[in-house]
Length: 323
Ligand SMILES: [Cu+2]
Image (cartoon, rainbow, N blue to C red; front, side, top):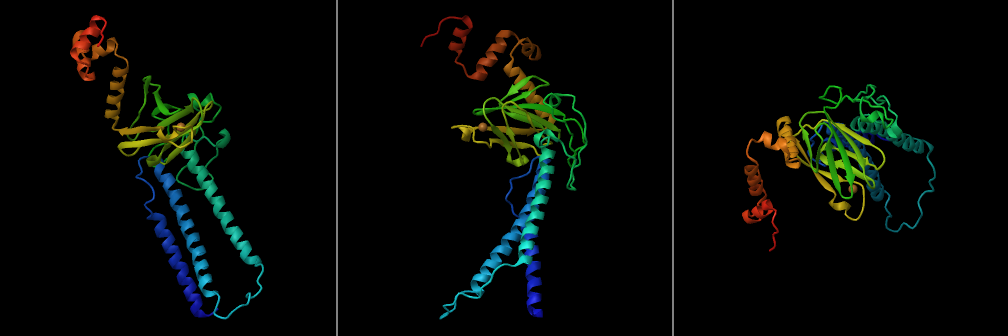
C-alpha cells in the first residue's frame, strides 16, 4: 500500500468517526424530553445511533466503492480471480459486533432497571454492571412490592436523591382505557396528573389482556400484564400535557386506547385532586367546603351542567317528566 492510499484511508476514518459522532448527537429523531428517565434513554440511544451510523457508512461505502472499482469492463467476459475465505477478516467482523452487542445488552439492562423501579428480569435485581450515572442500592420495601415477591430497589437518577417515591399511583389497563388510582386520597381518575419534580412510582396491572404503558416524552414503555405488577419509577421534569399510548396490540380497538398525562406544579396538582374528589363525591363535605344552602348548591350544579331550569325543577320535585 502506498503512502498516499494510507493517508486517504486515515482521512476517511477520521471523516467517518466525526460524521457518526455528529449525527449521533444531532439526529432530532426523539420528541422533547419531559422526565428524568429521558436522558438515561437518550444517551443510550445516541451511543447506539453513533455506532449504527458508523457501520452504515462503512458498509455502504465499501459496497459503492466495490461496485465502481470492480465493475465489468467493456470486452471482459472473465469470472475474475477465484477468492475464498479470509480468516483474519472473519475474526474481526465477528468479534467487533459481539463486543458491541454485549455492551448494548448490559447498558440496556441498566436503563431498563433504572426506569422500572429496580426490578430486574424474572424479579432478581442486579447491581449496575456497566459504569453509568445510575448506581443501585438494595433496600427492602415497606409497601406493595414486597407482597409480589420482588425486591424493591430505589434507583439513583440524575437530579434526584435516592429515596422512596413521593407519589404512588396504581395504573390499571383494560380494553380500551387506562384507570389511575391515587391510594393516598382514594381518588380514581381517567387522566394521570403528576406533580412536577416529585419522584413517582407507577404500580401497574391489567384487568383483561396484555397492554403496554408508553409515554414517548418520558421515554418510558412497560408491559402491563394481568395477574402481576410491573413498575415504572421516574421524576417528571417538564410541565405540560403528554399522550399515554397503549403499545401492545390488545384487541380491535387497541388504536384508540390512549390517555392523557398532565405534569403540573405541586399546587395545581393538589387543586386538581381536591376538585376531582369534590366532583366525584358530592357529599356533606362538599357543602362544608363551599358553604351555601343545599338549594343554592343544586342551582350551581344545574347551571354548571347546563340542565334547563324546568327539567331541573321537575327532577327536584321528583315528578315524572315526559317530553
Ligand atoms: Cu391496550
